[in-house]
Amino acid sequence: MESRSVAELWIYPIKSCRGIPVQQFTLDDRGPELDRRWMLVDSAGQFMTQREHPRMALIDVALDAGDVLVSAPGMSVHSFDPDAADTARACVVWNDTVELQHVDDEIDQWFSDFLSVRCTLMRMPQSTARIVDRTYSPSPRLVTLADAFPMLMIGTGSLDLLNEKLVARGQREVPMKRFRPNLVVSGTRPHEEDEWTSIRIGDVACSVVKPCARCAITTVDTRTGVQGKEPLRTLSEYRKVGSKVMFGQNVIHSGPGTLRVGDTVSF
Image (cartoon, rainbow, N blue to C red; front, side, top):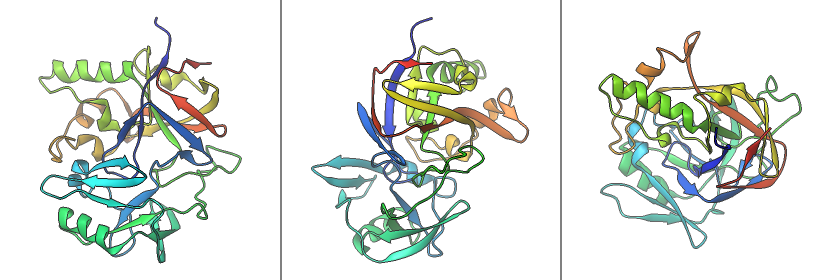
């Protein structure tokens, strides 16, 4: 078998919008820098995702000259300062209530116009501490506005097997970005990552702590923003554990560092 290495790295600055492929990222105390540091909330302060708003899959995010740029079909490009923040507000992401900072009214209007629902863009400040579930991290570890853990990792072998099964059923292959990983590891057997508990990526030690239960976001076509049935329907035939469908592994890094495409993944 070929050696295992980092094939892709991704960050997702705005929760549930499109990701940005990068050649490297720096890990701070809560995850990749700029990863899921913003999220959209509704009028009640509840987080918004592609589960209920699949058109979020069409919102591109880019970093340019220190600004964050957003674009979408039929919309002008809009930018905002990543440090922009005014009033603080309690917002909810899953079971956590966190204090976030409002960015500005103009960007709220941009998102509201595209999604046809009133929403607000909120920023996670360094002063807000959200803690990883202590079941999976006995020592307190911070996390961003990600669903639960600092990083998600998937091996290329896992996607290869899924796509073989999809094609055998007369379905289209799906790209890795449907699963929104931060780390894609090449040189793996299908679901080999399920067997790992501790790994080293370059010079960074990581704990592989929990399989990732997949939701309806994986069924949103990233090209069209339309929700379907695949790949969850096919995955449920061979990756179901209880009532959940598992694909990929959640990862907690031991401390600050830099990950790079091409880094060796070792044990």
